[in-house]
Image 1 (cartoon, rainbow, N blue to C red):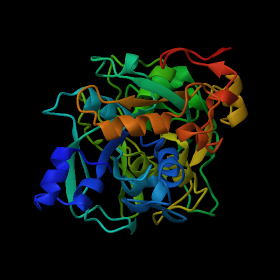
Image 2: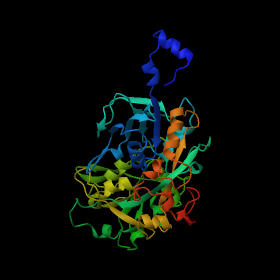
Image 3: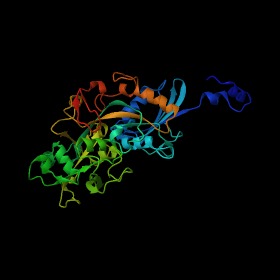
Image 4: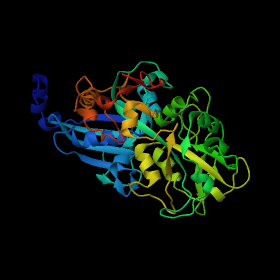
Length: 414
């Protein structure tokens, strides 16, 4: 690093060292979308640093084996263009990320991992944390539908994030004897979901069979989640009225209902983690458990999830809890979720993924990383996040025939 005359004089006096000047570490703090964190992990782990970085990933789920892509906290350490960087990620949810970036210098902080945390992949919460303002955030929606719309943030679209609906498990993994009425629940529609979001509905509204009298409830996220926002917009339930959602817990290994968790946003209750919600959908036994809301015996739940969290609920890569069953994916308005159905617009439950910069607290290192992650202008770039999408859990903008002009818009064709 070239030193000016003043710095050289200080170095000669021993007041600073050449090493300390040359090796000052650049820090970048990232938060936001839990649904898109695996793509961000892949990008930071393979495409940003000069060589493979040192990585600490904490609060990983055990999806088959320990999976750092799902970590709630991530630290990446290494050189970028010869300069030392530590990039810290704490995935708080899309809306929470936008709130952090629009907040002034006295707010908008998240708890990141401290520098001293050991490298490796762990299921534990990091022992020490670093409270800091945020430079960048990923969000599953644009700012026009966010809780905080001012000041307007600099943003760049980097991909498409799909979502799915699943019903809660009823038999242990690999078991048999699923209830007949539960087996008839194969599809959800916007009108039936809007009713269920008000506090539940008889199963018959989904199946068309009047004998299906058990109640179906929505197990969902709090309103700091981009998955939540996309659900409320896509079903046309809207963001003005608060939904009534349940949380699934376990008593003696059997699914039970309890009051949902409170979000730190503007009052909507729900899970603050997609992984926790997905895991709760694997708890069996609700078909014969007490319905503490509508009364009687037996109830079912439907959850909305990003695809990585859905993998946990569906047992695609192994189920992380016991006793556990496998949730079952549902079609939406009669259409199955596939990359092709999203690309052509027949399956509409997906969002545009955005990379945002802070309006108040952006560091120069944060601005540098923003440009690296977004890649060159244009949607054909294979650089940055756009070059690290797997074509299933995240889709490329270039693959899309259908588009949503805003997060609140219906899909149309180009």
